[in-house]
Amino acid sequence: MDRTPQDLADALVASFGDSGYGRVEPPVLQPADVFLDLSGEDIRARMFVTTDAAGREWALRPEYTIPVARAYLASPGAAEPAALSYGGPVFRLRAGESGEFWQAGIESYGRDDAEAADAEVLAIAFDAVNAMGLRRPEIRLGDVGLFTALLDALALPPARARQLRRAYAQGQLAAALGEDLTAAHAVGGEHAGLLRAVQGQDPKAARAFVEDVLNIAGISTVGGRTAAEIAERFLARAEAEADAGVSPEAVAVLRRFAAIAGDPDAASSQLRALAAEARLDLGAVLDSFDARTGFIAARGVDVAQIAFSAAFGRNLDYYTGVVFEIRDGGEADARPIVGGGRYDRLIQTLGASHPIPAVGCSIWLDRLAGALA
Image 1: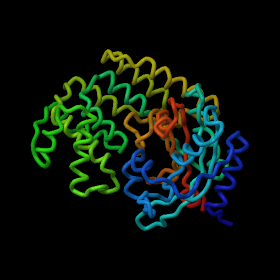
Image 2: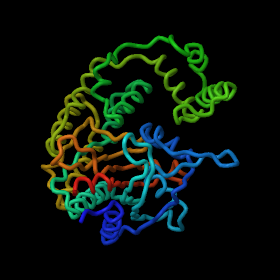
Image 3: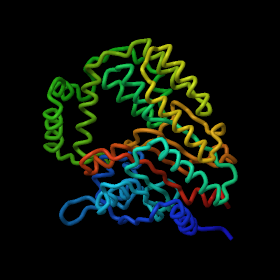
């Protein structure tokens, strides 16, 4: 008999409990602004949003990471490490599919041993889908922190670095690196007047100016973005218009980096060779990379079968470190069944007084059920 997504959720949450992850169930109805501000564009554009009598926007939860983080922050133990699990419906507009679907997952908060925590979350997810009967789970791995460290070491112009981070998260890094990044920009084109007006201003004043212009025009949201978010886009573009280009040497390093792929051990050797040749100080982040690989192996996962890609990111704005997906290796074009990663700044952004290390993952139960059928 085929198992429903709810059946799978109950079984998975029980197995997560055996690993020390206690179940939480955050409300289905969540403040919309936190997702509009913190989620990737893919989620923002597909949310179910409504407005209450007081004019406040609410959303059916489009994912679990932010709601579980908010529940953790509201709990008496918010200052302590915690291991939480969940299982239930989430809601997003999906072409040709139901807007309601089920997810289960885990979130680990407050652990100082980041590499071990990363390995634990990945291994628990891998073991869980194995136990459910997924015949050929394949792990794909990336590292936002490594890419960020490379951009910092290259000292790129801020807007260029932001452009590349966005392309990386959207899986478009190779395309972005195919453009001419060495050319400087000149102000012109659409909105040139507004761009000139904000260039050189204090960021806070420039943001307020753009928000005022939008409010005068009666614009509160566009395509799921708030006025504040639109203002940030204008500021980023204004900064880009004033930016110098990227040196040909830096572009060559970025292209070599994006081409690195293989199992984590092989990739580490290539990354260290690139850092040495380019005289970039990436020692700390690569030591962390290798430590995580060791912890993954110690959890019983065959590291040689993990596909690392230096160009692989996930389209959520809050990731800061390792990112991973697990797919059905028996399907050539399979969508991810598991997705997760590290997000060390999210909890503070949501209201904590200091950064709290965090890593977690979600399992798409409709996809898992389909793979098991």
